Every structure is written in C-alpha cells, then in structure tokens.
Image 1 (cartoon, rainbow, N blue to C red):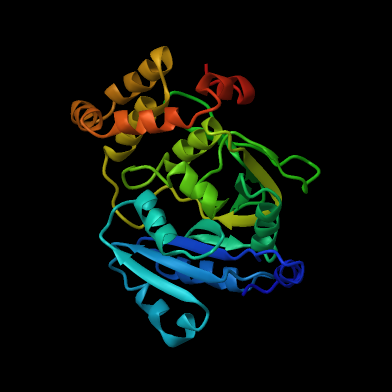
Image 2: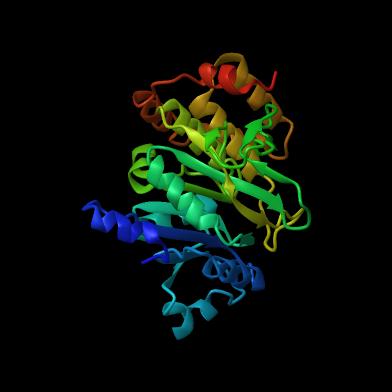
Length: 308
C-alpha cells in the first residue's frame, strides 16, 4: 500500500481504501525514465503499483527496470509494438488494479507531495479528471490546465490560481500528467486511437466535459516536465495532422470543423491524411460520444473561451 494515513483511516471506517496505479508510457527515454521513477519513489505517497509501458523502445532503458530491486518496488514493465502514447496508456490501464489511475510522461520530476495531493483530490472528487501544476524543468513558471487557442488545436497553459489549494475547473488536462478514477476512465472509454503523440489529452478532456465530467486543476500537486523541441525518437510528419482531423471529425460541426480541416490541408501529404482519417472509425466514435453527452461543445467554448 501507499505510504499514507488516509488508507488506514478509510479501512477503520469500513470503506474501501483507494489505491493508486501509476502508468508511465515511455519510448527510448534512457536516464530520463529512471530519474522520473526515482522522483516518484521519493514521494510522501508511493503508488501501489507502477506500470511502465515500453512503446517499442530500443535503448534498453526498460530492461533495467526488470531487475529485482525495481520489481521489489512494485514496478512492472509491459512491452508493446510501437503504437503511440494513447495506446500505451490504454495498455497500462488494462493492466492496472488501482482505484485511481495516474498517467505520467517519462521525463518528469514529481515534487514530494504530488501523488499524495492527487490521490486526496481523487478521493474527494472521484468523478473528475485532475490536472496538476506543471513547470518546465528548466524554469520556474508553472501552468495548471490549458485551453485551446486556434484551429490547429494548439493549447496555452493556464497560470495556477493564486490560492494554490482548492481544485477548480479548467478546459483541458494536459497528458503529461493527469489523474482519473478507474470507473471514470472506463466510463469515458479510455484514450482514443491517436497516432504517436498529441491531442489524445484534448480529446479526452472534451469527452469528459461532454459526458458531464469536470476537469479540475489541482495546483497543490506539482511537478516539473522536460519540454523538448525534439523527442529522442523519430516522429511521422503526418501524425499530428491526422490527430487534428480526428478531433475535428469526432467533436466539431460546421465552421469549426471546416476551420480545422483547412489547417490540415496546408500540411505535408494532406490528401493522404484526410483520406485515412475519413476512412477510419470516427463516425462510430462520434456516435458513442454523442450517446453519452449531457453538455455541448458550444457550451464548452462558451464556458472556457473560444479560439475565434
């Protein structure tokens, strides 16, 4: 169990104690992965299990984690064919046994109380999706949640509210670290089928809003994230355009969708991207999202601000 008093207190009250499954998706992160995990295990609360999903890596960084000293700390390595961060997180969630899921990038440094605060916030609001405060590892400025700013579906981080304690609604929970109750994650259908990396968090947050699930900032839970101009692996030139197209098809209508698709048309191999996206299962995904929606996309932009 995690190092925390809340579990024992819950057990004494006769309620089921919460448990935390940490899911770390990684691809050739090398020493960054190990430093991320060291920061996790230095916390005041340690996850009940840590699942590292190796998304087709070749640098051997996950092999180290199969040694006895890491297994004794509850680390489990799952290797998959390279499928992208959304698929890797879903695979980790399938293996996870915890009541709470925390998804974490493999190039982060958690502050001592980060997991403790996320766990407490989920105990209090199990129906929500949580976003901690994140700063660039090379600086001091932090963001807590984010918002969409244009039809490219780029985002701008939001500054933490000054009181620094109570959770409050934000438009998006960036995927570098987000926390969600297992039942809420399953209700939302996990992460959608996105390529490589990018926008799986935007889609997840939009689906949460539409299903009546609030996305909440938890400014007291803090970590550093290494924002990099180039990751240590090759990315396709078409993946992000495909992901923009998929979000537009699943969630948007009319001029908003058209504006996103016009941005895609200006990217390399746009015709190929559009054909592949339109031939996919977006209609089924759109229908599934609409079937569980209690709030509209337009209400989302009215609440949190539009890019127009």
